[in-house]
Length: 207
Image 1 (cartoon, rainbow, N blue to C red):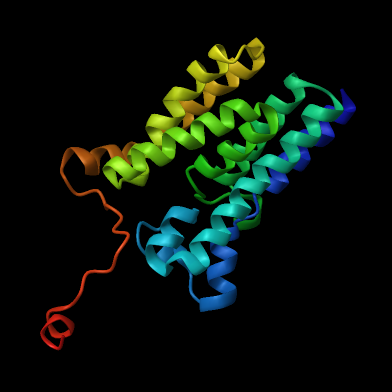
Image 2: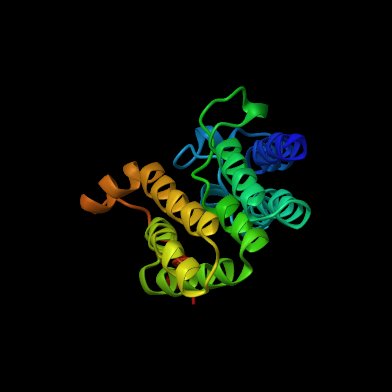
């Protein structure tokens, strides 16, 4: 019990590490909370600053869910891994290092948690995210569809009830934290990623 409590605390601290905020502060001397959607997550970092900062932010957000959950699952079991995963997600949402102010929407951290807790569920979720994102170019839609699919994958792959319950929790949490995105989607105002930069008229005319 004491070990699980220590692991939960470690999971929250790891989840609280606002890598998107820190990377932008270090390399651009700016506050990501004043840019784009104002979110500290990797999606907003990538949208504003591109892959050079967005990709490291995403990897680090995944790892802060993956590492503590993997350790807890290996040392104690699924129940401990689930509690640590919840703590890591809560840390990303309300980070200690930003004085509990608004953080990210927990998608990458939840994905990392499932890779550490139930790798087959995590990999299936990644596949769903990539397919939906490729089809829609909406990161928010891909994230919500993926989150909602997690309980199904956990059940299909035969994971125990704590993992299925965590999948259900993650699905509700991710959709809840995307309320503003849902409103923008309804009004046709949600940002869609473009993989290629559009050429400016001047550039086109000079070719």
